[in-house]
Length: 603
Image (cartoon, rainbow, N blue to C red):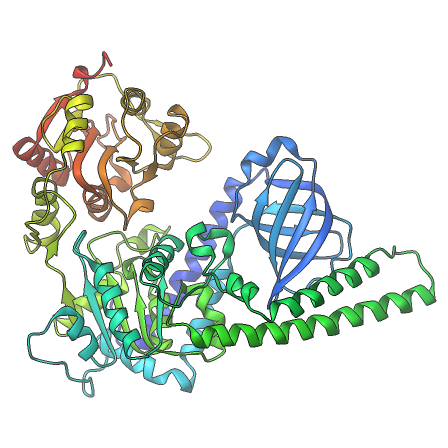
């Protein structure tokens, strides 16, 4: 880990770190897209102003054969001979593509090319955050960061000494604090209960998350409590259950929207009229076209002012605002701050994102588990540097950290190994955690086991991992076949989640099972749970190479998702050359059961 002598030095390092990551991601994107994915000859059909500098643009196209390569939320470049802009796909089918676009555009052309593009806006936001942090108005936030990272200790605020509940401790802490929540210990439950106390005091709360799934989960819980909640973010990446609480949706429901819609229709009509003029026209037509464009511009400014007033009114009434860091950043630049800021899944946030959270309000609390996966850095030299949350908890020495020590998710035999290996046996299991009869029946019927913990060992077969030559991702057909057979024999998709470390294995299992059961990578399933989990470890090779599967934090995520049954499929002869897998294998032998794959080959 790099050593720094000042906060400024560490900020400079984090800035350079992200710049290098940006270059690496761009390089990987370019290599992967040498035969650039594009839709040619897309005809502009309709432009609709949404808000700010955001537009919804519709195109027709005839690129039938390639639409399966595109997906909702994908970043794109839209360009013609005379102009270009960026956006995200809202929807696409064999004849039409709708894109949410950012920026002021003339949309002079009739025909455009749409190209899959590398998303750089988050990196640009990080640069701006560092710039803002240097301004006088954020000097208090900078001082707090110095306290957290132990660059300044002299004037650090004191902490309460009395033993109090986790909620009371968080509310009594001045300035900042941390919640260290091992899997299943109720981290989100504590976040919501503390939020309830803050809302009861009529104080404003912002919840920031590093991904959209975490945001949507918080919003769903707020909806269940009947709170006045607003979801910020790109609407193309938000769950249906949360979309009704998206800021745009709330604006559309406001009574002022009727007048705004009239102006919108008028704007469309003017735009359509001046766009109908072709390039070869005389002076009189040119002047009329310019007059129409000015009229459209003035009307657009009127719409923007009224929409901004509506947005501010809705914002002021909200009890909780929830969004990703990038979705809230425009509001931070406007100077909109909060009494409390919570960062959920803080382990997965970059250091600069955590700096930004401190800038957003008077009190800032980081919720997460430093023993699980952090933000995914591409460069190896960046991957083992502790996360901001881990550094903060380490430097804090318990004064401002709430450690949650009782888990309510996993059966004792499932949690025992992670608890021993990752948490030094500090986590207790609630007596309310009981076996589930339905899951026990599934284990007996499909896996011939009366245990809740099972390893199906593929050692001794001629099974070998393979690599996708295009993406480089690894897969294992033997393990994929076995999972597919379990699905064909009735593995219940409502009870079971398939997990694997590699995206290629995920995609192959999905195709082989006709997408009939949920399949995720370890990384994407962090923060979630399932009644039963079946894991395909994939790696089996003569070199005993585990690749990124050797990362203990990744294994910790995988082993702590299951509530009532955990089935591990893997080659012990390869995996157990790694000490942690060897200990895991022995733990399964002691607490559960080891079976050979040969017992299932007749399925």
